Length: 299
Image (cartoon, rainbow, N blue to C red):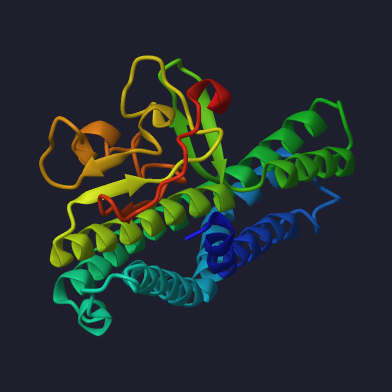
C-alpha cells in the first residue's frame, strides 16, 4: 500500500486524537477564566491544587467520550489492511482469495495485533491524562511565581502560560536517547507513530503468512530515497538492505534471510518505528524489479 493511501485510512483516527487534545487544552484554559481577583495569591494557588482531583476526572470524562469511536476506527483500519494484504495476491494463479481471507491463521494475526493496539492506546490515553495534569500544573505554578514576585500581572502571566501550553500541546510520550537528549512526542505524533507501526505489522504478518500458505519463500523489500542510514548497525541501516530479495525461511548463497538481514521484528529494523518499507512475494524469472537505488544518492 502506498503511503498516501495509508494516510487516508489513518486520518479519522488522527482527527479524533486532535479533537481530544483540543478538548483537553480547552479544559485547562477553563480553569483560569474566573479567578482574576485573587489570582496569584497563596490562597488561590492552594485552592487550585485542591481542585486537581476534580480536574483529572473531567479529563477522564473527555477521554471516555472518544474512546469508543477511536476503537471502532482502529479496528476498521486493521481489518482493511489485513484484507488488502491478502488481496495483494490477487494475480497469483494458485491463490484462493476467499480461503485466504477467511484463513484461521490470518484471522489470528489480526486479532493478536488488535489486542496489541488496544494496549498501546491504553498507555497513550494514560499519558495524555498525565500530560494534561502537567500542562495545568506548569501554567498554575508559573502564574503563581510570576504574579507573587511582581514580574507580571495575573492576566499577563496566565495568558503567556496558556499560549506556551497551546504551542507545546499535550505530551503523548517522552524518550531518552542514547546521547542523553530527551525527545518529546505530541499526543497526535505518538498516536501516528504507534498506529503506523501496528499497521505495518498487520500487513507484514498477513503477507508473510499468506506467502507460506502459497508456498512462496522469496520476498522483495521495497525501496525509497531518504531511507535511514547507520554506519555500524546493520538492521538500522535501512539504505543497505532495501530494494533486495530475501528468503522468508532459511538462507542461501544468493539470498540472505529476511529477518537476519533486515531486523524484522526489531524496533530499529524492517516494519519498526517510522519504517515506510513494504514487502511483496518474488518469483524468480517472473517478477520484474526496479533498479536498486544508489546508496550515495539515497544519503
